[in-house]
Length: 326
Image (cartoon, rainbow, N blue to C red; front, side):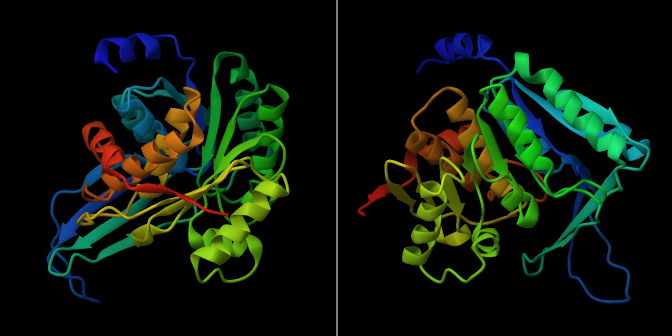
């Protein structure tokens, strides 16, 4: 497809709405080695807008999509977060809160390549604050094409929050893509979920037992689809690739031979690639290919940097995806 034709198509696309209930400013740096007690001299810190849905929005924008990012924010770090989102060209929809937006910290030890990630809980939201988020989501439904929710829930937000978002999406006939964990994921499953994207740890927690091989993983994913918990399940497996299960079949994506520089944002990039393609009514297996390309491209970038569009398209084309026989 020519870039001119793609630009024309994108100009008619309603925005995708991403939801990030526990956003952060992500700080990343490098240091020669990590050791207790002593000072560790670091490179100049990089600051990026972070949190699952914000990362998804940043990648969708890089792929040429129109996207709005809804998130609660407060305090000086919340102001910085809004500025960082805007710098990415993403329309920020900020719900003000009384607490201070969190900061997360990632340090890469250059001697070994090991990465150390420090993640804090985030501010406690009052019932009024999280209800304001739901009200704002409801208010946006007439002007969007899809809802994507990604990331953890902060203290104070009930575990059925994403279930409430799913109900809003279902009521307005909007596709809902969800990348969540534990009770928040479990509570949301049901009608209206177009896609869930767990990793293996999250899927094992959801089904309540270990899934030691591909056969067990496929059984678990197929059960979720058959039981109407989600229309499609994309299971990311890190260095082992990924699986996609739909009502029509299952596909396996082999891992691409890449040097991993940072795993930060790889899952969010995968979700963004799939959401971008699904918003254009691409077949789900084609969306899977785009997701694989985006997730793979993300591991090539350092620190909290996300994938770049040219890498996404190249790796999506190179991805080895095969149908799995029943």
